[in-house]
Length: 244
Image 1 (cartoon, rainbow, N blue to C red):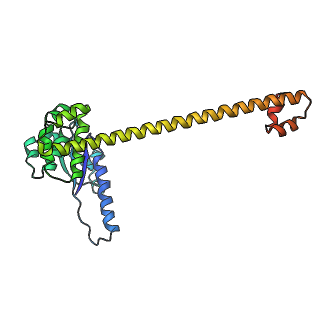
Image 2: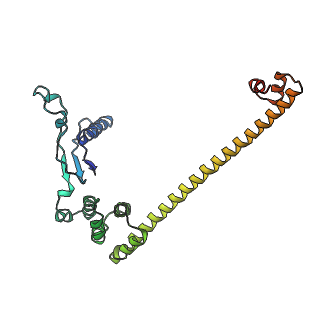
Image 3: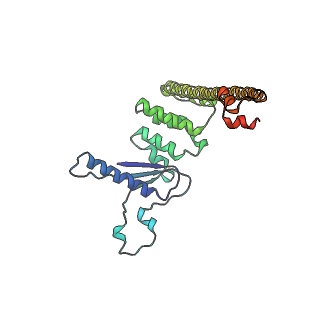
């Protein structure tokens, strides 16, 4: 199965899915498959705008019947999550999948996410690996966009059976954020330090050049040859000529 997920309407998605399909079949050939295995494409959409199902053939407009056999076209399974009833999603046997689809369905509704935080996590964290649970929580909290103190308050309302896991995961997320922020600040400091050092080097070089030009002017006043002045002070002859 090939699963594609979209949070916004894109009429060229069938072409994107088609490129994935052909890449998948070519990969089977490279792996030495004597007979290709069919790939079933599935599209999950949870955007705000209405999106009607269409295939790649519709992108070509009205074509003559003689041209239709040459147009690449295929069907795909299409799920518009906002149109699926919550009870159908909650009724899925895979509890982690049920919670994930509910979060995707309401990913643009922060009030719903906050109001159903406890219920959805109670469903989603009941099974699945630690990494999957962490990913689910990370996405959920990212969509809610709540301040740290408010998140901790919401976590306190969770059942005790999952509260500890959620809090420890959230602490890891916070620590990761702090580490990334520290790394970002360190990069900024290094960039600022490098910029200051470069400016200082330019200032020192400019001062050296100014001193050389002063010396060159004094030597010319003492009737030194232009070429000799340039060679001694290691400056271009053209600069010395301008001082005459």
